[in-house]
Length: 272
Image (cartoon, rainbow, N blue to C red):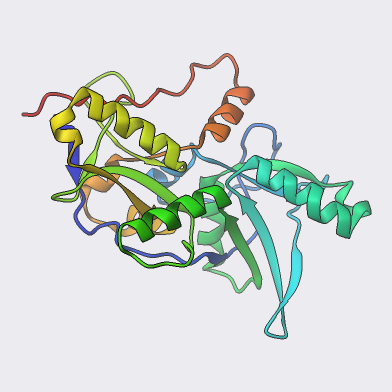
């Protein structure tokens, strides 16, 4: 099995930062029984299920809807945060100052990225005016913007949720890792630049000659989700979304007796 996979131009799909959605989420640890939305794309949901996101809810489990004016038109919006710390800061630093009575009843609640995806998919069937926004970690947005500019792509800011992918500079080949016993290897898409850098550095030490021909590519999460949902490229099934270190620690805190997530291994499997 090769240590790389070619995806060609499959991931060259840009997504929108703002997506409309409708309430209704499935069951995850610590959230009680909430209405689940049936979705036929089981494989897509399975991949997204491993990544937590965070939003604010009242004691009834209802989303907090914020209103703002956009070009003299009121907009209703619900925020979903990639980082639990960012969600907590938003509650502490903004909402508690603007409406302390309301904020005192709110809490940060975990969902999965799959739940967010289901909400967005369901919203396409209905005319809900609420915008469901996925909020990236600003440090990773800055890293993505800097990397793109360094590679000659002039951008003021990365508009989306950045993912970082170790790849080879030629042939659109992506570095792969084993995640379980057996010969199957997968393409890790990291939510943190630092995770991608660490894997790539490990690979360079293990295989210096091939490591010299590597780089980190920045892609948009929305484009990846669209590709998972619509691409006919069989290699797309090899993509694995690797949560941030903060999120991994959060997952472990929910199930301390479970085995920790496999650490990415950079040493390649023998090529056939």
